[in-house]
Image (cartoon, rainbow, N blue to C red; front, side, top):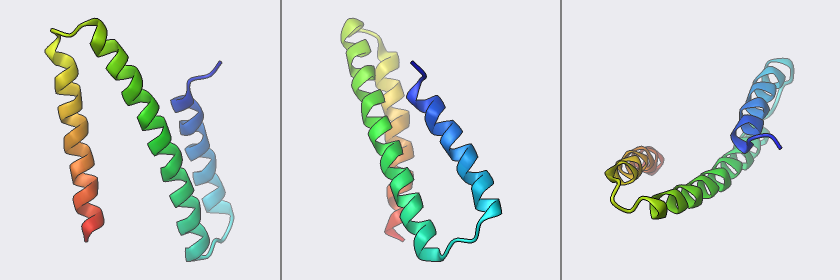
Length: 84
């Protein structure tokens, strides 16, 4: 079974190639990108759930807390960007 992130990366590569070949309206591109973001968010949730399981195996390992600190910073940056 292939890794979901690999499939997602391949999907993005193929979409970029298609973007160069086809004309899309702004609304079509917006809708497509919103669907792609929804895919990324679902994948992120799965990865966070897996990360939580791994952390439970090593509750004294501060690396997991550090990982989430970094994720939190990146999400805050996205949130700030979307606030305009």
